[in-house]
Length: 420
Image (tube, rainbow, N blue to C red; front, side, top):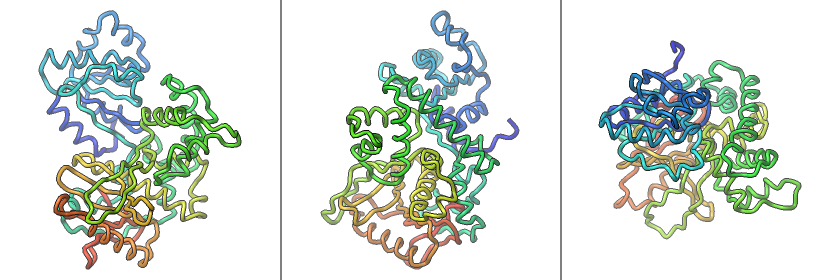
């Protein structure tokens, strides 16, 4: 594995393994879970390809644990009984770092599994951020921003067309070094696998590939927006006047969530100084922006021809990267929008004791950045800081240019300079 590229999750996994008996790494197929787990595991059992291992779960499960630890149980959802065996193994030995499980789907009967609390920790993995794939310098640290430190960055060499190509190619390890044409072909096959194999295998939705593809396309058109299920239902129906029932739409969305291909931002609900009514619907994103464009059959050429739409997909890439960098800090990403849509903030990064607000702008024009900075300052003034504290940082994420802190206290940071 000499060609392994370091991941932000590497240190988080090592920390988790030193503090708990086993760790489950969850994430979409192809995001690098197995490669990351294999860096720390001493032995491996792959349930997707090893029928004998699956059979041993019924005949002699103890034999699966007679290997050097940590033991990697890859694609554990193919043999969900292993969950309880791992939990019991951890209880019996009372040691840390015994097993690593990886999975790209939540099993249908997961609710019937005994809790792994205190024995099995969960680590979420996503496709590579720009920093991990080598397309961000990482000069500006999210951790430092959350600590209130001033951050600066040199003018980045990444151009808007190059960034749009990165959106299309995505952060998939298999596509490192590939061109856009190859990446689009790979993504087409990836989506076909999800629609025709992975979702039907979950057993929760009727096999309807055309409608599932329209679900993907609907979400692709709605990236970065709090679109409701009724709107998705209308898109799914297409030319068919009969819209799917709400339960059907919910089942489709649940299947995508269980496959870890969607990664929505729930609404942040801070105490406000005013009586502002806030939206409660989550803002919808894919786990990687390439999925939305793949579902729409669009490439960087189409994005260049429609920069307004490109801005939403650039935002999706920025939110993906913020999730990757915030997770080791115990942080999560939220959205903030007024009920009537007059004001909004693209991303709130909230850790247990700090928060920061981010606006994402594809345009580098000064008036656009000025307007975004004014919006962030206005937003921060509305938060009841006696309860929530002052923001650690207010940041405008841009596509190009340099990075630094403005006189008004707002940071301007090119995404290709942001890192953990």
